[in-house]
Each structure stands twice: as C-alpha cells, then as structure tokens.
Image 1: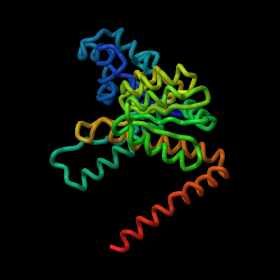
Image 2: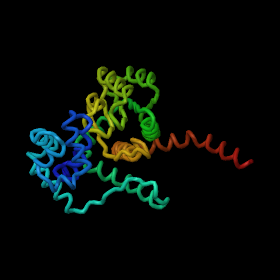
Image 3: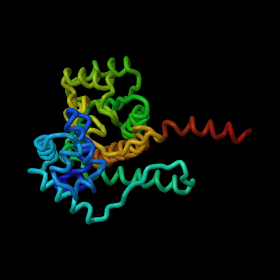
Image 4: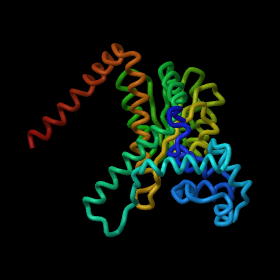
Length: 296
C-alpha cells in the first residue's frame, strides 16, 4: 500500500473492500458493512455495530486489526476524519439518468478508480515489478475476456520497443507458453477477480520453473496473489450494469502504461531505436491499405 496514505480513512475503506472476499462469513459481513456504510460506522459504537450485524465485538476488533487499526476506536476515528474531508460520493447509475448524467458518472467512476488505486497501490511492489520486467528475457501476458484485451495491449507496447513479449488468452496456449518460461523470464497475469483458474494454473507452472510472477488484480487477498511474487492491486467499483471490470480495465491499463514507461525510460535510446524499427516495419502494410481505400 502507498505509504503516504497508509493510515488514512480512505485507504482503510479501500482495504476493507479489497480483503473482504478472502475472509470468513462473519468477518466479511463486517468489512462489507464498513466499505459500504463507512459514514454510518464513523458515528456509531462497537456495541451498536455488534448488535446490528449480529456478530461478536471480538470479531469486529479482529477486523479492525486486519485493517491496521489497534481497535474500534482507531478505526472509528479514521473514518470520522475521512468524513470531515467531505470526499466526493460516486453515484451509481439510475434508470432515469440523462445521457449527460451517464457520461459524467462513467467518467467520475473511472477517475475515482484511478485515484483510489494510487492510494492503495504498494509502491515497493511496483518498483519490484519494474525491476523484474526491466531484467526479463521474455515477458508473457495472460488474461481471459476483458483481461485478455488488456494483455494484448500491454504486449503490443513492450514488443514495439524491442522486448520479447507474447500474450495468450486461450487456456491451453497459456499453459504451453508458461511451461517454456524459466529463470529470468516474467509472466504477468491479469485477473480482476483474482480467481481466473487458467491464469492461476499457468502462473503456478511458471513459478515452479523459476520465472517471476506478477499479477494485476482488484483484491489484495485472492488465489492469484497466492501464486504471485509481486502483486499490483487496483481499486475499482463493481457495477451490475457495466460489468465487474469496467473501471478496472482503465486502471489495469494505466498500471501497465506506468510499468511500460518506467522500463522504457531506463533504456531510452535503445527503446527509441527499436520503436523506429518496429514503426517502419508496418508502414508498408498501412500504406497499401490506405491506397486501397483511396482508390474506392
């Protein structure tokens, strides 16, 4: 987690949302309530919360410690301070929304996801990811569905500056490619939920072969983080209308863009030389296509 914001009420709410799926039923009830009703929690006491959620005070205190608070008083104080800052509330979509309102909400959710991720993203882990990719002989990007599209975009960026990068969205091809990676190679698995089985299995295989594993996910404790040497955790709200990873796509792309830029700037001259080579390699095909349509 970003050390500059590690103790803030905002990071506490984001952490509660991120770890919730990995907890037991009762602890999950508490973290979900904190994440969704943090304003109310900031103005209640532990006995009232215990009675409302029908969990013991000991369970609430255990959750507080998971959220880096000594006890409920500290948690409540952080949330109260957060409330006093009058943070912007991101509204969900409504059936009566006008097109203009929808546009603003989509943009606001994306902006919030980026800002929240910048708050919770562990800078040490990001630096480790930069170092791993910078020294990699080969980079393999893997993901399914929307995450597969993100993998393709990232592969394109790294390949055009001369790095040996591949991506696969097919389960069997992911496993085959992973089986060939060894020490000195890096696999980057992208999974919003952190539960994509084929991606996890491929990363397990890669890890056994000695390659470095990096994941980009929305949940700090999930199956994919268990098989990752380096975890880059985003924060994006889920919406039943836009899909589970709508805002997360923008965040994941931004994390990978930052990773790309950090690596490129370490080898700027070589990167620019390779960029020019790869650009020239596709000019002729682009020119032929353009000429084809100009004749019509």
